[in-house]
Image 1 (spheres, rainbow, N blue to C red):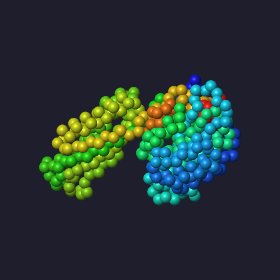
Image 2: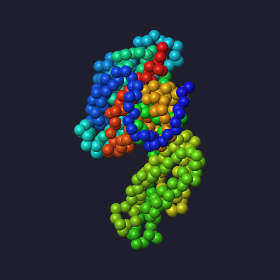
Image 3: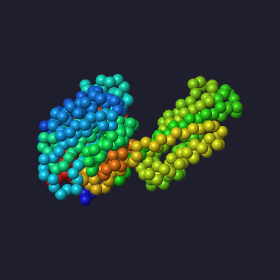
Image 4: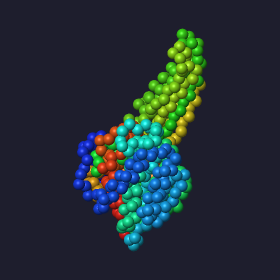
Length: 410
């Protein structure tokens, strides 16, 4: 089995672009087309399931490439293409491999001033899904032309990764069973990782994310008479402090957990103690037991603060994306393909990230792995100045191709 050599923080990578790597033959010739698709998608960002233009572009390209089957409307606006290899079936265990890219953008006003910047006010591709879609299109074109593999390569273009659980919608529409997918792989760009290198780890690689919404009802009144009130602002402040103690005092220090309260809304006047306050935030964990513990403690803390202060506190705790867990054998497969593209020294083991990813749902259905492809020294994900690095396109596209040819070898 292939094993990684380096354990490196993404931020610690040398930011230089790695040049003269052995990308797949002809992919460099396809780069102008892949870049054009990427920039076109970048100019026309769409949210969640409303990716109608992007999905139509993807489906049109897949038909042009000669995919054996192109299915639209899976998971509302998802697109799937099937490419059958022309090599005779071998003795390999895997006959069908799924490759997934996400298509949706974010509700962020772009601040890049690029000539191909978003034309849709308030929307932008701030997470690089335009690049993910373009790289998988590039791989589909190459695979449909060469077909140098045995079995089926299934290219999956998913809507609504950014909070809409589009992976679930596609799964519920029969994605895995309808196309006979046996293994499934994903890729995400990584700011801070040099272009031409990859980062991955077996086991948990991205966190599960849960949403917390809290409504506090106290007793409002005049700011000069706090003793006649139950101050919802003070209750909220106490609650935030108490919630922070969960990670520091209830979770094993060797485990990972994050509780962030990111919204606090209360009051409209400086001399009125408000009747109500509302808090909202997120909980991130890397394993099921810690996730269960943190939820239990959040509920206990909320109940305790309510009892101590006399306020009425309503908690809504919603489970979100699960932990993204890379399967060990498939991580080894991914590492091998990445090394063939980038070289041994440029495929690194990374620490897990506390961000979430709905590819986790696909990895609960089938064995597979998520890998990070270097985006260089760019702005961070979800930042208004972020831009996918076009120099990364050939590396990600080549990775997909090698992954298919290696996994579906005769």
